[in-house]
Amino acid sequence: MAKSYSPAAERNKDPILNILKNYIFGKNQRILEIGSGNAQHAVYFASHFKELEWVVSDQSKNHPNIKEYLKESSLENLTGP
Image (cartoon, rainbow, N blue to C red):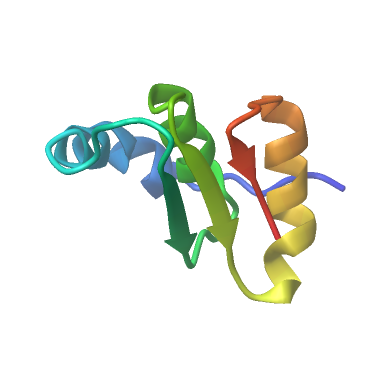
């Protein structure tokens, strides 16, 4: 399966990350991302917040694509549906 790619997610990832850095701190916390889409943002954010567990969620129709992104990322702090 070819995973989807979102140009908008790519453009917005750094501005969103800069905002998240103002609100997410600490260790041993779990972040639930609701409406993860293809998980493109989740992979990026989890790679910057390695001390947190990032959990993605979305409609079941998006799960195969999410799983491709998670598998490719090999991030230990990123889990999915």
